[in-house]
Amino acid sequence: MRKIYEMGIWFFDLPSAKHLEAFKGLKNLTEDEELIGLPHLEAEEGVSLSGKPLHRFESIVLSTIRRNLSLPDSIRSLTPSFASEVFTQKEIDRITFDPLRFDKALALFDPEETPFLLIGENYGDWLLALNRIDLLHVMVSRVREKGFLPIFSGQWTTFVLPKAKSLNVAAYAVPIDRKWGSSDLQRAIDLIKKFDKPVIGLNPLADGKLLKELEGIFTFLLGELKVCALIIKIASEGDAGRILEVLKTFPSLIPPRKT
Image (cartoon, rainbow, N blue to C red):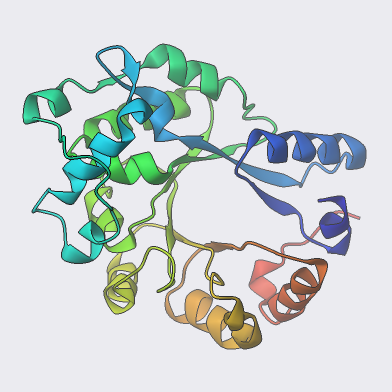
């Protein structure tokens, strides 16, 4: 992380506790107030069924979603069936918000250090598919009460954007890539163009071959789709250098830094 920072990158995605600790160490070392980190809080941390964390029922959740005929075929194809058992509607209705577990997970973060918080991920999509967006509303409100700006993260772009639009979040982070999450890429593009809230592109370079087409990809995403940001997985220092060189052609993405 320090090497990447020294190359000129000041914003870091922090998907795990290990990444968060490394970020805190870098911030203490550099004393750079403009260094920004984006930690993740998965929706599964805040939901329970009959007093048990919902992730213990993951196979049943997925089987239930797969059999939900209201989902597009492109989404159901991404949810393999792991169990013959499915939730009844009464069981789905009994899924509740778990404030103790959620607050414990939320306590790992400090809005002074990391003002933005990515919330949702797989279980965010799954709760939407189960028609339990009410639970996500509660989590988002809780996050705001603690002083964070929540960003909703979803994996199924064409399903998430219209379904989660009512959430009080700062932005929506979704894949814009055929290989990861957007099985219907053209429909995802059409939705984003019409979407009237900020959208962040998740991992637009999931296909490693696209590194050779950075100028065109960034021009399309930032110029035509007008996404407000991109979260890119960087595999090496060489990739980081290549990406930074291309980003220099987009001056609006390089904010002035204190010297």
